[in-house]
Amino acid sequence: MRVFGQKYGLGDVWVELNMHNRYMPLFVAGVGNCNDTPANKNYTFKTGISPYFKIGASYNFLYNSNPDYKLMGGLRYGIGFTRWSVTDVTVDEGYWGTPAHYELDGINSTTGYIEVVFGIRVKLWRWLSAGWNIIYHSVLHDSSSPHGQPMYIPGYGMRKGAVTGNFSLVYTIPINKKNTPEVDKL
Image (cartoon, rainbow, N blue to C red; front, side, top):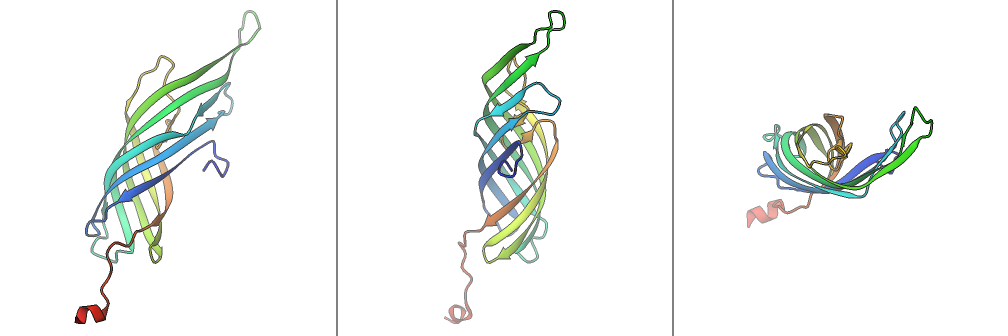
């Protein structure tokens, strides 16, 4: 999303094991980034490229139908690691009339969160699929800092929102080969 002008974004890759088209445990690894000056605020919040990891599983409600289409629900635990800064902070001094400027730099944060996921995935062509998810997430634990909590969490997004969404383009590695009628005859 950063490429399209968003102030924050993330990208990840994941490994998912399809067990009988019903259960799908997964592991996710990715990076996130933020550089945001909120409207009507007197600061800029920045993070570098920050890693995150998720582990969980999904359940396919359409497991008895065509494996090219999936309607899934899932649960995931994620953890994000970031080093954040708040720059260009201006505090107006009312009495003397001279504003004060300061910065907070290099604050480390580790945040754990849980996600409840609902989504669909459809086959586009051969081993290529596309899908989207709606995600409800909540922070479970956060490292403490005397300067507060980061407003952006890698893998989670902005702290203020509990519901988010994503889209994905999926390449499935073809491990199982279907038998042809000639092989079945042998």
